[in-house]
Image 1: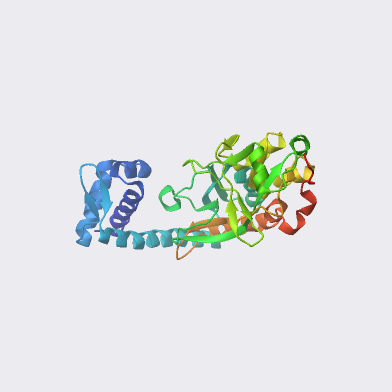
Image 2: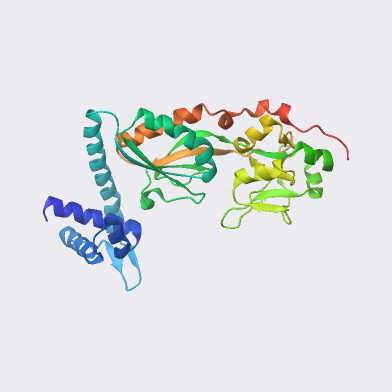
Length: 322
């Protein structure tokens, strides 16, 4: 098999493994499904092993196929990096960068950082998908993603952006009308505004006891369930009840006096992180490295992402009896 043919065959194999079918791979590569199947078959014949187990309805990697896929990815990434490296010697990083992020973070943090990125590297083109669902970076073709929580995929490189603290908030007008809760048990008398994930799970509200133990309250019967965490801060500022949301979402409202913190000394802020992740590869393309470094520097200077918990006492609601 000639080198050019071998590369086409490897591209067809990797795309098929990522897409899950010859037809989907063909659409991505803009060739026919028959051509993809022929390329993969020729690669198997050249290697002397079967890479896929095929049935009329399914296509799955063999053990040899999974091992070959890992090495094939590294080879293709090295080729991309080699091209980018040569291009970089002729000037600034150039090429296309695909980013996956949530709608709220994309709007409030990423978008303000993009003008500076484009001004610094005008030869870069940027594509951003705003989606609160977790994307598969390799399968979906993203160069990097911004995610919150605990990232379990060991195949990804993870760079911390900030701690992701949770807070309980309500509007001063609501608290003046309904009273300020003094204990977690008091929350049962308030309309609670909670976040639910797309799978139906409710984000828990946890509290620290005097002995250091952590307890959670029952959120059944919550007044409002929203999938967008930034919408919880909006609902609370409108006086709809008490919400738990990320500190960076609540920060503008706290500064303007539209929200106050509730049960600050008892609520557990969690131990989550906001991170930037990208596929683990032997070489990171200059276009991706330049984007990562620029965005991390921009996020490091974003006040809302780095509010010290020790500075929040001044934003806590004054306790009063009802």
